[in-house]
Image 1 (spheres, helix red, strand yellow):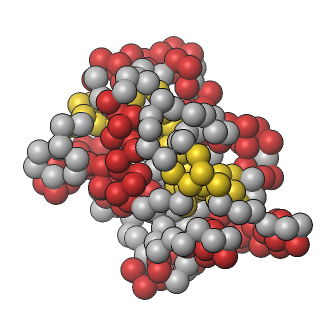
Image 2 (spheres, rainbow, N blue to C red; image 1 turned 90 degrees about the vertical axis):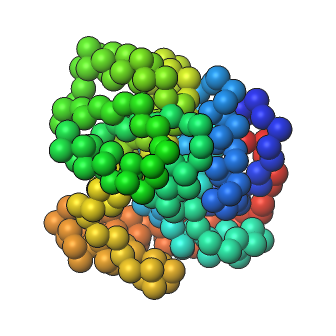
Image 3 (cartoon, rainbow, N blue to C red; image 1 turned 45 degrees about the horizontal axis):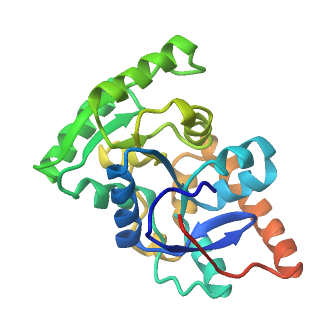
Length: 262
């Protein structure tokens, strides 16, 4: 992980080689707010079992994730694993909810990257209704498929022109993490969050799992039932791989918390 110039300390607990921050919403918001004000470029990922398993399974993705400055534990199975290793976590830091906490912060401007124009219009309207003081400085609905250098240049120009310090990237995993990591050296100053389906959730286009399912780590089952053809591999294959990799890691001695300046 990168080492930003900040005095805020945060422990991390490695799970399958990914250092997950042992923090809560308040801690994550405080840290990213400090980054938003320091003039640098910082990257934040919200990790579920799919993401950490993919980082272990795919060397290219693992290298991309290593360029992120903060990886918060988005899934309950990760919290349970971290707590078995002494983290003392009370709850996960769920990406869509972290986005809402950050949007509630005064004086920070935001940029939305991802989705379609209708989705972004709906999302922007609903966010302004929920947070009347929110400053959404710009948005960009990129084309589907791979982007040309010219398209990437237009995206970076739009972000820079907006002056936003929080940039929400809703492209889905792994595309959003790969894009942030690949272009990190060229990104305009700001904090870049990979937030997956948060745009669709907050725009009301996709239902979130009931709170009781989220608390019990069953959100994956709810989403699989809703979109089986699109999500079966992510949850069936990668959940199985996660269990196998975790068993091998645990038998090999596991991991203990460590303090990092994130």
